[in-house]
Length: 404
Image (cartoon, rainbow, N blue to C red; front, top):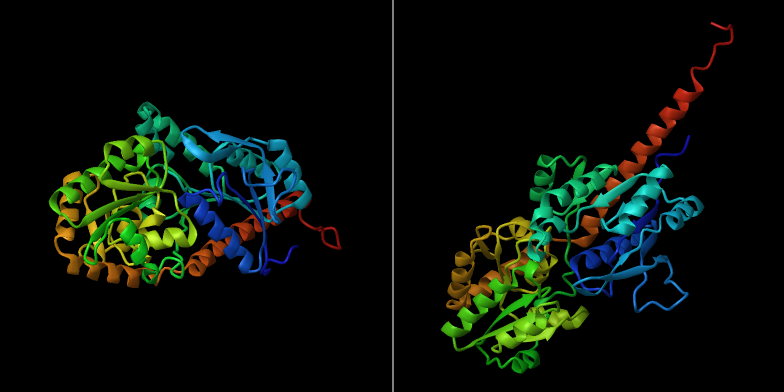
């Protein structure tokens, strides 16, 4: 019987997005892969080949599969359903457990191949595809998408979600074995000390100017129209407010033309992104489709007061009027009015930003990764115990020496 008191595991992480791609899932997967590796586990990353990958060579610890571009998501790809390739990989390397982060063709193939090989699987609920469908003329498909997601996740041994609210929602919808995989934030990278006077001068700021900042995808599913309506109201009411949008997406070119008073600076990463965060004052996050919203905690760590709707990361970490601002879900008027009130009281705005930083300092990625490690170990222990019981049942009871 295998030793159940092991410390290191062979873990395969399957994801259809990974840095240098820019999105919350890619960032979370980078933290998960590096965090589990630092804890002594052998991690194999399975992902689609990216434009930056050398042809014929994969980075160490990466298994690359073919992929195709995702329509409307420039620079992102989905992996092809290479079931047999993964089946052979699982048989050859035999991971102890899989973590499947995305529910695209690659994720489905990985789950099917793992189940066929009797390898335990944990799935992650990282993106609310059923919410996105409403913004692309596919509202009638919301219920079928939910049912498809439920079927996918319920075939795994457990599903991990980023917030307690989402866990309750999925439990009510019939998802089984739902557990928490919260999110940390890199407080060394995202730090108020990275505030840049030179960058603010590029934006036309004076010493007392207030910068209203948005970071994220420039797309309909992010409720970007509300961000711009709020920015328009701010610049109409205050001469010394500057508005900056960091990110890219299908609406970028059109909105940059129709909102000339706002600065659209494109996508940023690493220290450059951190400097953009820290050089702002008020963070506008109008999205209604997040499973978590990593940008919320990144902005908080950077010392910004966040104005957001009361759900996902904002619900988990913002205390209204103390370290940020919360509006009832979908209440656009309150969202806009709170931004105007915050801009009118710069001292209060900066006090909330300082409190946000203190909150973020308690959100450690190593602590978060430890909870995922514990769940992976639990699923593996249960799988091995079930296999041992099945083997014992097949062999039958051992006869006694006297034949009784």
